[in-house]
Length: 214
Ligand SMILES: Nc1ncnc2c1ncn2[C@@H]1O[C@H](COP(=O)(O)OP(=O)(O)OP(=O)(O)O)[C@@H](O)[C@H]1O
Ligand SMILES: [Mg+2]
Image (cartoon, rainbow, N blue to C red):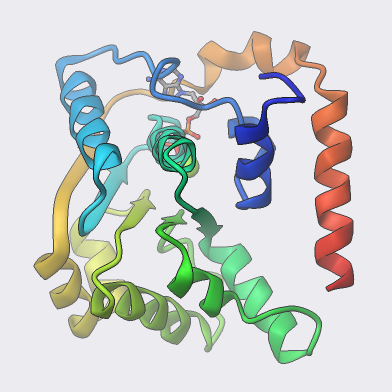
């Protein structure tokens, strides 16, 4: 990943975590037939996103990587994309309530492609379920594409989200993929420990400063 890579900068501004800025379809290596099939499905979605793409399953199996690869492809095609981890969406909503930032629901409704990452990683706040419900409803009513990733099984996620949302997700699903393999995190350990991306880190600090002063 180069610090001058404009797509990486756009991904940074779209809330993509630093560790996944370089994620693309080219560097997602399938190890099993299941992963090969999942890669093919996600690439099909990325070409012309329609409906909801669910990626559920074990930790470290590449769900967020593929979600970011999809965002990268859409941004390269001139579209907008935004990623929210559930805890960060809630944090931004509370900042909005305290008049310390914009309403994150507006960004989630307006963007061409939204990724709700780590859905179901609930902190237990009273405003959490209504927030996720509203964001998913907005995408459904406007027929806008949505990627949902979660460590939960579909039954548990659906139980958490409730009947209204379960029904909407069912009615809009492009594909529901379950990642059952082992974590890939250990394979990238060397790169993680050795990477030195000073320029990207200072860009990240700049974006955080701009966001904090909004
Ligand atoms: N098939 C793959 N090929 C190459 N790298 C991969 C692959 N799958 C995952 N990785 C890498 O492993 C790490 C973990 O992947 P990722 O964050 O996408 O997992 P995840 O499924 O979202 O996990 P979690 O459920 O814990 O959020 C990342 O650095 C990612 O780039
Ligand atoms: Mg993830």
